[in-house]
Length: 335
Ligand SMILES: [Mn+2]
Image 1 (tube, rainbow, N blue to C red):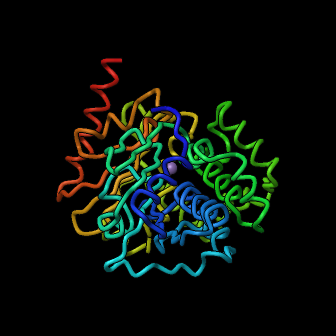
Image 2 (image 1 turned 90 degrees about the horizontal axis):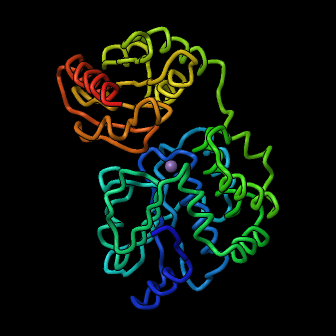
């Protein structure tokens, strides 16, 4: 399925099940794209379908940058959730590949109907309607599935941040500030600007570092190690070091991207022990040197060709790292 008309599917779903409530969910530790996709749909429905009640749901662990925009939301913040006991409602899930990563899973499980919109190659295909199209940002897919007329209406009826602002937020964040873009993205970005989006204002959500954050990041980068003739670089951080240096997952989350973006590095990754023997790993490449979604599949991880994650239980992280590097070497040999 390459084209998807949200309004038709949404209208039909609400009417056949006789529903008046919509809950919108995203993934754990929401980033700009998850927040942008969820919140843009919430505003779009709020303005264009006033007969329905809308409840967007974002985890409290929202990233610093997108949070700057979300805290200004006067329609939905502070978030409130409906009492779902005995109530029928529709759930829309955005930017979330697997049930394991979904935030608010209980809402999904008790929904009368579900619509899934995603851009991950690793999407499990769950939901009554599952529209997954691999692209740079889920918000880009959201943009293309909506009626431009109704989106313009939502942008004109509400002050910042409105549906168009949120789509723009998602696109900016998942493309690294339009660093990874194509014609379709620039088309969407230009259309959104024509609807009144202020590019400079939303760019500020990408720049939310403080000097203390940079000090910490420099410290983490000092611990980076090279492998495979220096073309791979990684950071492994166990619980002891995490406690000593007070490193949160948010502190380490960007490191794999920073490593990958180095001119002399092709693959960057981090392994972070978020609970005893529970490793949360993040892999970044350009998607061509190595496909990290394929790389992590045998280990139970995945995501996109150039950005993928893995959660793994082991008391021997060195062995896990070795197995992954062996697979990198094997995949490179076959290329
Ligand atoms: Mn995304």
